[in-house]
Length: 81
View 1: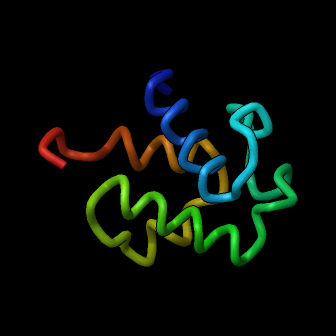
View 2: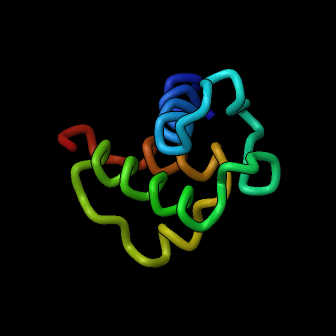
């Protein structure tokens, strides 16, 4: 995974969960971050949608449970977005 996408994903998650960037490591996921509960998940989705400038599809939302999942969304974004 490209480092820029991973860093952007970590920052998005740390902003959404209101925790330090250091707390969100490259392998962080719903199991390792206590703040990533149902409300935290909604906040992460909202942050991603703001970053991407579009609503996420239900299957995209269901597939988000780690830094890697968020980074993949950023990597597959068209350049114009």
